Amino acid sequence: MVDPLVGAHSYDEPADTTASGPLDRLTSWHSDWRGLRVAVLGLGMTGFAAADTLAELGSDVLVVAGRDPDDRARLLEVLGVPLVTADLGSADLKTAPDELIAHRPELIIVSPGFHPDHVLLTWAASLGIPVWGDIELAWRLRDKVGAPAPWILVTGTNGKTTTVQLTATMLAAAGHRVAPCGNIGVPVLDAIRDPQGWDVLVVELSSYQLHHLPQSGPGQLAPWSSVCLNIADDHLDWHGSAAAYRAAKAKVYDNTAVACVYNKADLATMRMVEDAEVQDGARAIGFGLGVPGPSDLGIVDGILCDRAFLEDRFDTAIELCTVADLATAGLAAPHIVANVLAAAALARSFDVAPGAIRTALETFHLDAHRIEVVATSAGVSWVDDSKATNPHAADASLAAYDSVVWLVGGLLKGVDIDALVAKHVGRLRGAVVIGVERNEVLASFRRHAPALRVFEIDSDDTGEVMPTAVSLAAALAEAGDVVLLAPAAASMDQFASYAERGAKFAAAVHDYLGGGSDDDSSSTPGV
Image (cartoon, rainbow, N blue to C red; front, side):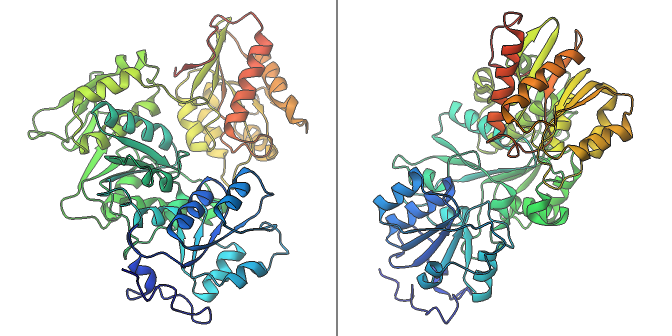
C-alpha cells in the first residue's frame, strides 16, 4: 500500500526524524520508497550501490561526488540517475552545490569516507535532513528476497577482513549459504539484493560505518552475534578523538541477540560488552591465547578449545583444532590465531559443528599482503604485511618475529607511532623509513634507538621507493632475519592502496633477488 506520508513534507519543513516521521515507515523493501527525494554522497562502491538500490526502488535520486566521471558515472546515466561533481575537499566549498539545494532531499545517504564535519553534512544538519549510512539502508531493505538473513557483525582496529573470511568459510563448511560483505569490499546493499538469498551475512564494519548507525528506532541493527576484535587509536583525524573512535566501535554490540564476542587480551572490548544494551539472553563470549574459562574460547596445551558452546562448559571443553594444524595452514602468527578463535566463536554461535571448523581451516588461506612470505634467500625471509596500516596492526606483525629489518612509514592519520617504536627496538636489526610523514618516525628512532641503523628514503619518485627500500633492507639483513613491510601507516601518500604498496614491494624483492630465492613461490601465506 502506498504510504501517503512519504514525501509529504516540504523543503522548508525539515524532515521529521521522530517516531511518527515518514522515514520511520520505510522499514522494508516492500515499503513505498517511490518518489522519495534522496541525495547520495559519494560514488565509490557503497555510494554506487546505494544509488542503484534506490533507483530500483523508484526513489528520486541525485548523486554528489568529488571525482571525475568514470565507469560508475556512465552506469548512473544508464540508470537515469543524475550526477553532480564538485571539489568536495576544497576549502572554498562553503555550502551545498546548487543542484543539491534544488533537489530538496528528504534523506541523505553518506558514503563512509565523508568526514563527520564535512560541509555537506553540516548543511544537512542545519536543515534537519536525516543522514543514513549504507548499512542502515541495507538493514531496512534486507527482506527483498524473503525472510531476512541474520547478520553477524565484525569490527576492530585490525583483523576484521581475515576474521570475516574465516567466519564465512566456517559457515560455508557447515553447509550455509553465506555472504561476507560490508567493508570487506562487497557492499551489503549488493548482498541483500542477490536473488538467491542467503542463510547468513557476515558483515565487516568500519568505524566510519558504525559512526552513522542509530542506537534506537527502526533503523537500529539487531545482529545475531557481534565482535570487536581489538581497539587501538586509529582514524583520529576522522573521528576527532580516541573517545569518539571507541564509541563508534562499541556500537557493534548494540542490540545483539545471541553472542557478544570480545578479546580477553583487550579489556576495552570487554568493557564495551558490559556497557552495551543487548537483547535478553545474549551472552558474553571471550577469546584469547591463554587457557579459556567457562564461556571462553582459548588454547590448552596447543589445542584450540571451546568452553562456551557446550552444556557442561564448567568441566569440559570441545577441541576445535591444534596450533600445529594452523602452522601447517600458514595461520600460526599469534594475531592470526586470535582471529581464528574469534571467528570460531561467531561460527559456533550459529551452531557450526567443530568438524566443519576444522575442515574450513584446512583450506583457508590469508589474503595477499597479510604476513605473506614473498621470498626466502640466504636465510632471509621477505614478508609483505602492507595491510598493517596502523601501529596496532604493525605491533602484531612485528611481535611474530625475533629479528627484523623493518620497512615503515606512510600516512600516519594523526596516530602517534612513538610507543610502537619503543616497544620493538629490541628486535630490530635496522629500519628503512618511507612515506611523506617520515619526521615523526625518524624522531622516534632517534629517541629510542639512536644507535640503530636507519635509512630514510626521501625520493619523490614513487616508482623508485620500493626498489630503493629493498636494496637498503638487503644491506641491513643477515641470515635468520625477516625483512618486514609492516608500515604502520596508510599508503595513499605514495601508492594507490596498501595492495599496490605490497605488490610493488614483492616485485622489487624478486627483481633484487633475481634467481637467488630459495623459495620460488610468491604467494606463500603466513609465517
